[in-house]
Length: 86
Image (tube, rainbow, N blue to C red):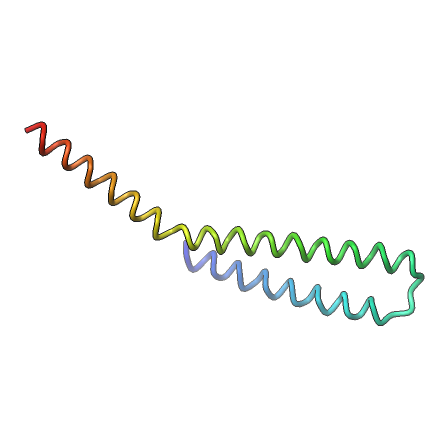
């Protein structure tokens, strides 16, 4: 799970960098300004969505240790309740 998410983050970073190159190419091109503006907006929005996915995956990776602590705490409390009931 952790390796898979890290791999996804790496792939998303590569896609983000490719979009950065496409944005630079469009800015340097001599397209019609209206078409250029719409195309740049589409590329920048795609880049924004990729950044959101990266943030979501990084948050999930950061929360993993807390999930483990919560599971351990629940097991501990359950064990204590069983012990006190005896």
